[in-house]
Amino acid sequence: MPKRSIEESIRRAKASNALEGLHSTKEQDELVKLSLEGKITHDDFIKKVLELTNE
Image (spheres, rainbow, N blue to C red):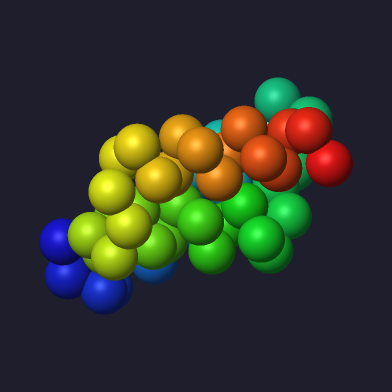
């Protein structure tokens, strides 16, 4: 996915979530970006999400 598309997708998702009163941290945003860029596997993404929820 091109970098512009990734950034636009994240921006739109954040806006949609904000309408519902949900907000993400910079760390969460970066994790999503790494996943969409293919820099981490889906399994690594899930593992890191679970780690974040247990902090």
